[in-house]
Length: 212
Image 1 (spheres, helix red, strand yellow):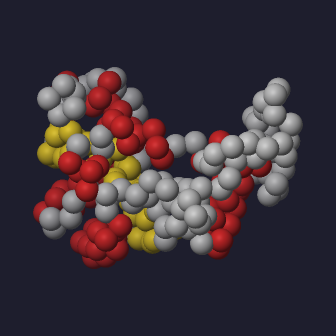
Image 2 (cartoon, rainbow, N blue to C red; image 1 turned 180 degrees about the vertical axis):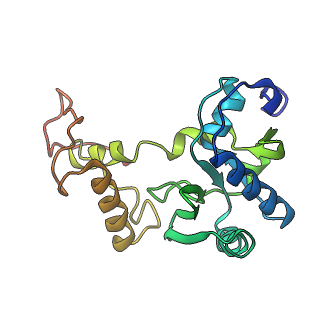
């Protein structure tokens, strides 16, 4: 992959930048100077892979779990920003005056840990004039569609891969994660998502094979 993927540099793009770019640049530089490994994902990586400029409002960084607290502590001390380990199984956040950065170290469902392989297949590029590594293309689709996950569980009858024996999340972690999705969707727990459709050949509660 390293030899075949072409990514755009900052100078190749004509994308709009607002105030978050300045804060994001400082975060990238601080982590680099501190020797804390990270990968750039989200909108910034999408720009570089596709060469399409767009307004990027947040910065998604992917780190190994062992480096997350170190990054939170360093950025809080150096940039004077608010930091928190929002979800202890997958996400930390950095905020300052409305700008924010997500530090991601697992999938929201707890089954896709950011490990050495992510870094082994990362793609060199530049973001906001800072040399960085981009999240590999293969990893981008594994951390998406959290709302769809509930549809799969509640309506399609899949087993919950967040929990043992498939995953490593506790019942409490899964409950917090589920409540967060439901808050975003503004619906009571257990109520069918507005956009959900039940497959024609699978009644609610019908058996399925495999797990999500």
